[in-house]
Image (cartoon, rainbow, N blue to C red; front, side):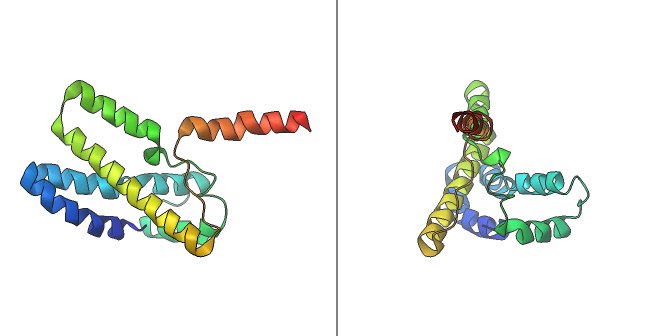
Length: 152
């Protein structure tokens, strides 16, 4: 999904969170819901060998590369279960309410990303899920491929 779509989708729960918690909590929720996609920009920086710094150029670069395997075989660090666990542990130990808003925003964002992928999998049959775990990504990339090459 595009950042503006996440922003629009984040406005609906923001209204409820505004009433239940406070306006800052609701705004932190929406900000986390949108800003989680910074890892897409970081991926473009890495793929381009840090040559594309302009946001508009990096966005266009990412759209051009969507049919290739760059984003499928890559890891979006802020979209992983490990990152969510770190944010949860920060909240657990600090009990800082706005960290909870960040956690809610991240989970809400990831939920919508997966609903979009399920929709496109049904419609186009070729869409792939993002990597959800850094550990699983590394195991698949290094351990399992190494074992397959030694068994052949």
